[in-house]
Image (tube, rainbow, N blue to C red; front, side):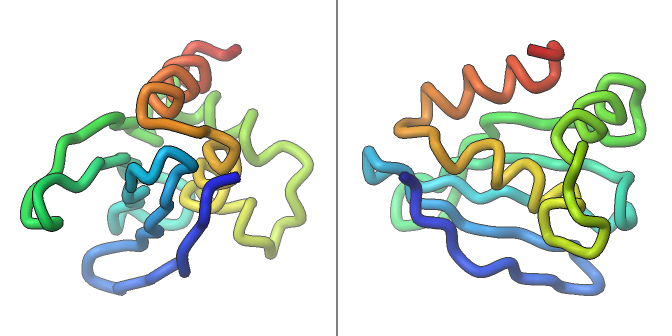
Length: 114
């Protein structure tokens, strides 16, 4: 199972969490400062010593597809839990991914409703 880091919140920039997958690859899940439920969620894979990154996934949480994906991921989550937030919901959904390719596949399934 992936190693999930701390959830870091910056009032100006939003929140993020770093995850180390079983393969050793790292991803950073970011929720911008769009608010508690809205805004934009991105997943990036850091490259060369963390000085740059590749965007693996992006979801506009205010769009119809983003709202539907978030509703599915947070269904049944206690309202005050981290899993009830966009960041927590996506991290929870990806924590069993073993590689970056699996993260990409899982993200595509999340937004398509599977």
